[in-house]
Amino acid sequence: MRRAIYPGSFDPVTNGHLDVVDRARKLFDEVIVAVAHNDQKQPLFTLDERLELLQATIGGLERVRIAPLEGLLVKFALEQQAIAVVRGLRAVSDFEFEFQMALMNRKLEGAVETIFLMPKEEYTYLSSRIVKEIARLGGDIAKFVPPSVVEAFNRKRTS
Ligand code: ADP
Image (cartoon, rainbow, N blue to C red; front, side, top):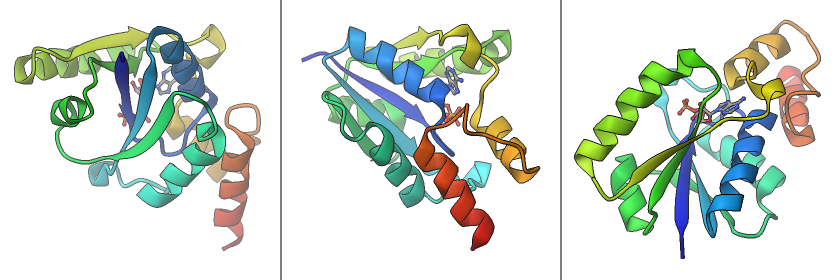
């Protein structure tokens, strides 16, 4: 069983994330989408909301699991018997941070490999941060995120 972990904040999940999940599923028998608490980033959606939005979007896919990410990523990967960590690379701007993380994770645990996947070009400009910004300013985000995320933003606006 070749298993990979795809970690992130997913605040909220976008079509770019879904593209990476699709690609990862072609390479691995199982993909665990692991959602980090990430209190430092002060997420807009709570951990439970982010898990639910992923569940609503890709929860039905075979060979995909969604789980909260507790503690150190490489430790979680070993516990889950995963052989790889998958990350998305959109542009050179992602590279420096991702490279540092990948090498640090290798230092911490040599058995877990990091794999970078490039999304379709149309998703290279897409991030959760920019989606939140567009939504805050009243723009239409329907092209960038799954329908359940559009609904979640509408609920937040009216609550
Ligand atoms: P993090 O806070 O860990 O960066 P994100 O949810 O922002 O969490 O991203 C999780 C992973 O998905 C990262 O590897 C990021 O580069 C990747 N990612 C985010 N948006 C896209 C996108 N549009 N296309 C490809 N990869 C993406």
